[in-house]
Length: 198
Image 1: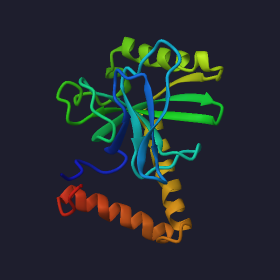
Image 2: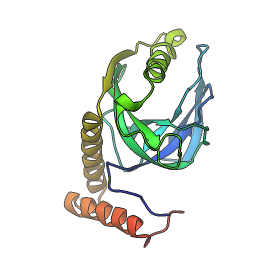
Image 3: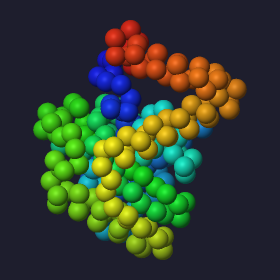
Image 4: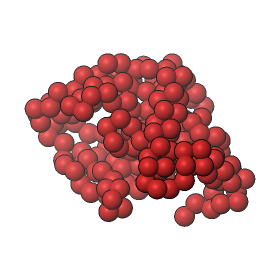
């Protein structure tokens, strides 16, 4: 399968937590496995698929977080092509925390959504409510700042991709320009079907 568009207009989300779960799974990059971080203490569940965006590095040291709007839950480790349509800006114990809101391109019921204002308003309120309450019984403060539009989300993704490229360079890999060209060439090869996804 090849990528249906260029980054960041189309992103590859790796699902960690399927919709409907109270288990918070996280990908352990070093070990290459998914681990149960905790079961949510509050009486809430993830009302969206939750994961991260490949080829990014956010300010907290993890990949950029992604919230996936999809009719049916997927599964931990599922890779999904998606379109960023906005994002939720938050603050937590680590500081700035941005979660890109995306729609699954493979879901005919959602793929028409291109902007935040096309999402049912109550769905956005539900997502905000989840993040306002999911750590309430864990004695951890979370400040939900508010929704940001698609342009803001795309800029965060560009910045986080640039950070990822610098990290690759710092690991003794390709230079920043070479890493950027390699990512672009790989993305283009995926679009052309020349490189297959595992």
